[in-house]
Image 1: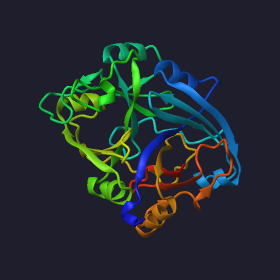
Image 2: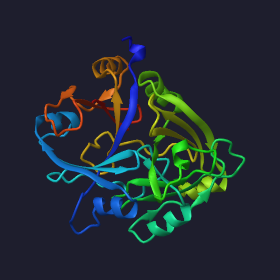
Image 3: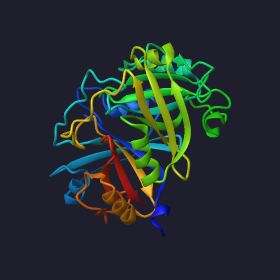
Image 4: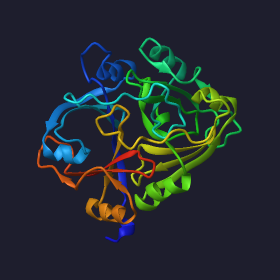
Length: 323
C-alpha cells in the first residue's frame, strides 16, 4: 500500500465532552439529545487506565462514554467525572476557530423548530433562515443554529428537493433524520485542504460562498461572509465542512492549553485503512499529536482496535481509529 492509498474511510462518530451525561442539577446531555433531538441510546460504558490517558492526553482519567444514534450517524457524549473541565467561553461566535457544529437534518423545519423551542437551548440564529436561490450550492436550504445546554454549537438543516444527499429525501416519518456534517471554523482553506484532502484523502464534495442578510441572521454576525468547502470520506456518509470567514474575518484561535476534558473539546472519529502509515505521514508533515503513541485496545467492549488523537492545523481534534 503506497502512502497515496492511506485514507479516511468514513466518519465513525463525533465525540462531545460534556459536563454531565445523566442526572445532576443541570439538564443532562442525554436527556437533551434524546428528548429534544430524537437520538437513541446505543451504549453507556465507563473506561479508565493508562491507555485512555495516553489516547486523550489527560493523566489519570476515568471517562464515561454514552453513544447515541440518529439515523445512520453516531455521537458520543464524553464525561470526565473526576475532572472539572473548563467551560466553553460564553461569548463564543461562529468565526472563533474553536467553533464546530453538528448539522442535524430534519424532515420539516417548522415542526422541528417548534419542538426544539420547548427545551433549554440558546439560539444563535434569529429564527430558521432560507438561503437565497441565487446561491447555486445551497439555495433553498433552511437552517437554524443554536447551542446545547453545555454551549456546544448545533444546527438544524432542511434540504429542498435536489439538494443534499439522496437519503435525506427518502420518505421518513421521523422529524430528525441524521447528521449531514460537522462544520469547523478554519483560518485558511488551502491549509485545511492540505490536511483533510492531501494528507487524509478526503474528497471535495461542494464549494459555496454564503453571505448577505441571511447568513448574518443565521450566524448572528453582522455582514457575515463565509467561504464553505464540503468534504466527504471515500465511503460517503457524514462529511466535514470548512468555514473560512472572510467577514468579519477570523475570530480567536483555540487556546493551546485546552484539553480533551474541557467542554469545548469535540473530536471527529475518522476510520482509516492504515493507521501506522498515516501516523508516519502526519509526523513528517508537522501535525500536532495529542496521543503519546498509537494506543492498542485489547478491551472487547471498546468499539475499536487502535486509536491516535491528533489536531488539524487550526487545533481541531481528530481521533484516527482502526476498527
